[in-house]
Image (cartoon, rainbow, N blue to C red; front, side, top):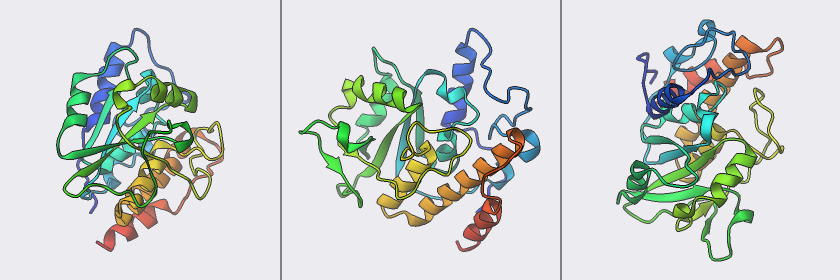
Length: 246
C-alpha cells in the first residue's frame, strides 16, 4: 500500500538534531538544488507521495558517522521510510548513547552486527543466510553508515558491540547506486544491504520492496543532479505493480 502522508521518522529526527548542532552550513554536492525536506531529492522529483507501507518482524539500528546523516544521497533513510522499527544514532567513539544501549538490551531484540566476516575475531559468531534467529526474538540489524574507511573505524572502536554476532553480506552483483562511487565494487549502499538482510530472514516481499524503493530514489535523485541518468527509469512502475500484488 502507498502511504501519501509524510512520515517523520528516526533518520529525519537525527538529521534535524545534527543540523542544529552544526557550527557551519553543510554543503553537499548539488547544494543549489531545492530539496524536499523528507526524501532530500529535488522537489520537482520528490518521491514522498509514493512511499510504501509494510510490516516487518525485523528492526534496524543505524550508526551514522558524524555528518553522514546530512548527506542528501544517504540511503539509510530509505530503510526508515519502510521499516517502522528503525533507530538512528550518531556514532560516538568515546562513549555509547544510553538510548542506544537500551535498545540493544531490549528483550524483544536479537542484535546482529552487519560487517564482513573477514574482520571478525576467531571467537566471534558469524551468521550466514538464512539467519538463525532464536525463537521468540526479533532480529535487530546494526549497520554502520558512512564511507568504508569510517565503517571500519566504527566497527573496531565500538567495544560495547563486541558481544554480538556478525552477519556478513556476500553480494551477488555490484551495487546499483550510481550517485556515489564505492571504494570497492563489492560494497553496497546501506539500503541495498538492508534489502539483502530482509531476504536473509525470509521477508522476500519486504526485501524486494526496499530494493525497488532504493531504485526509485536513485533514479529520481539523479534526475535532479545529473545530466546523464543511469538509474532505473522503470522503478516507479515496478513499485506500483509490486504493491498491487498485496
